[in-house]
Amino acid sequence: MEREPLSFEDALQELEAIVNALEAGPATLEEALELYERGIHLAAHCESLLERAELRVRVLRQNEDGEVELQDVDAEALDTWSEE
Image (cartoon, rainbow, N blue to C red; front, side, top):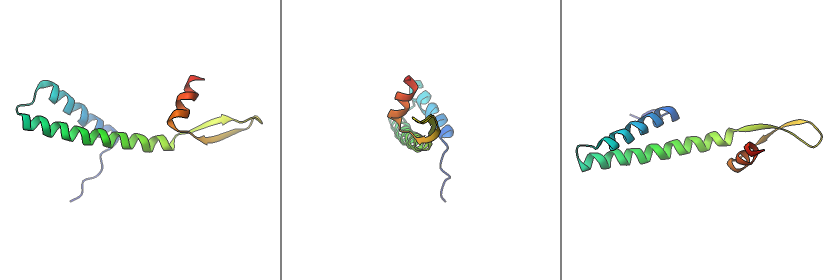
């Protein structure tokens, strides 16, 4: 049976719970390794979801003629734009 993919929020919440459990000190080394491995998978999942969201970001910009247009923006462009 296939599991439904975790949303970003659910994955992040589970990742935070894992961090808290690791900080509290798991009962065994094996448990710590299992938690760590799950955490790595969740972190990669969150990163993938953020990358896909980034591709969907669109920004309204005014061109040289004064017209407003939509432009796709990547992460570097967002950093530059937010500094303006």
